[in-house]
Length: 367
Image (tube, rainbow, N blue to C red; front, side):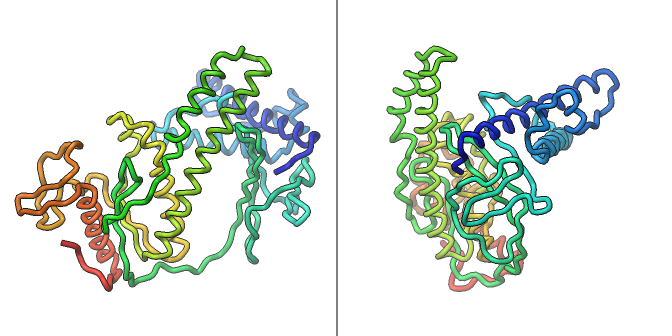
């Protein structure tokens, strides 16, 4: 999005109002519960008399802030590990708000994107919208690098049915150095964008730490660091999109382990390497791209002994250290550790497909 100066001011007011109403409602809920032990039910409209400036922004944006708070409460009571809702910070949380389509208040045309209160905003459209799609909502956000984005949500009917016969099945094992190793022994030439930019990022972040807080030079340097992080993220997403598209176009089913990447990064001190790989993002891309074509995305349980099991005889080792990069079995089978795991993941995926009454042709369990 390319808003003019007047629109940028209104966007800043909207971001601030959404953050304010979220924090105020959360604070009132906490105080009310401490006094009465009951849940407070309120709406943003009740705050507009005390804070008239809330009337200047889109009311649907405030209503969605209330829905987000209610969702946060529901998630907390459903699963305590999610954590209690937190107050939003002006400096740490992303500036964004969501508005909904009501009586044609949002339109997308060649001239731009028309939004409530904001009017027509110039945009660079990512792709054309197919016929039959119904616009539902728009989320407007401001990135730390100073760029405005509008994410438009559409609803559409689909008659895509999962294929009941697959020919080509691929097994992928996570690799810290090359993203993955497949059951054919192939690995992508992963560029490691964070590692390539790490030294430059360190220099710019040192400069930022020396800038006086609240000063204009600090804001400029902060924007510069944010642009570098954004560039790294874009490089990573570009590679993952292309790689997942290549796999989706060739294979009918992809088998992958359901790994806990956050736990792995903490337990093994591989935080930077795990984050640089973007394995979780890659997994999500494979999932939705395969689903769009009626193909199958199979996740193997994380406790499945893919690395410890021999893909030749099926024997499972009791112990296997991370330093052992070559798998050696008592049956005489010798194989690269990651390749052996990828073959086991593929074999397990084929068995899961069979349990779903999906026939697998032109392939058999590898040995």
